[in-house]
Image 1: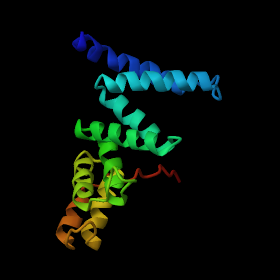
Image 2: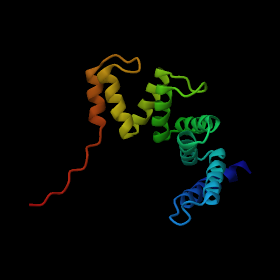
Image 3: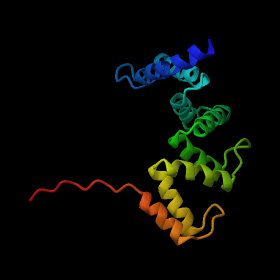
Image 4: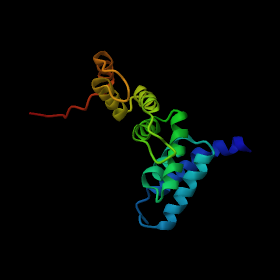
Length: 163
């Protein structure tokens, strides 16, 4: 039965995403509650995308500290499953610390930033450049590593200018 629930979880996550982004009924609290329940169900059945989205919504938009901590827990599970966005967010959470549950830990922050950067998350790559340029998060200033991270940056698109 658990196998079946894990197979259904991506579908439920998709339905939640569609419901959450519906243009009609934007201010409907009922629609919001239903979407959040669907995200939670999919997250609790191990869907990485649902863990990331639901964790992000709870942590950054939660109404109370308990919700925000629970969101961080979901984000950490998504990050540990390889979600680049969640890895970057966990880097931020461990860099700054949050309440008593997520104490500031520069070693964990650097590890999560590195994982996200290796997946080409643009903000994580930018943070890794700053880490090695400035010697932040307990890392020593290392221009060679900073340059290595600069080489991983994806270039901005060049606007098509016609003359």
